[in-house]
Image (cartoon, rainbow, N blue to C red; front, side, top):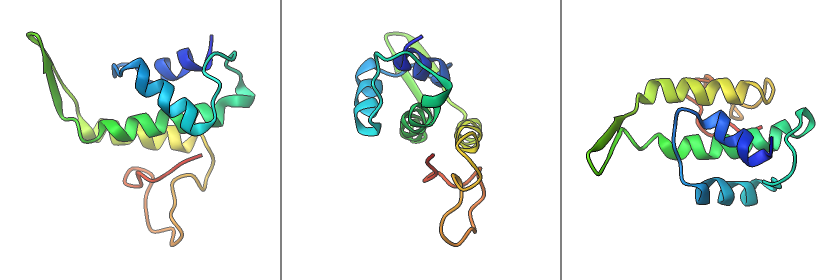
Length: 108
């Protein structure tokens, strides 16, 4: 499994363009064609978090008779869970006043 495929798997069930995954891999310094490994988990998680944050503004979409609705609360929970994999400080700002479910600036 490549890093690109790992990010796609982490994003499931959300469908995003390959170009967005490619861009976030570049932004986070992730070699998208490299084999995914536990040692490389944090950069992959950072790229995934960046993509999921983009989806928060999307509540629904429709394309050619196909429509989909997204639950932003569930998406916030997914972001929180993924940020939690990055360590205890991933979800806190400098004051420590944010909770993992509401801190969307979290990164690994």
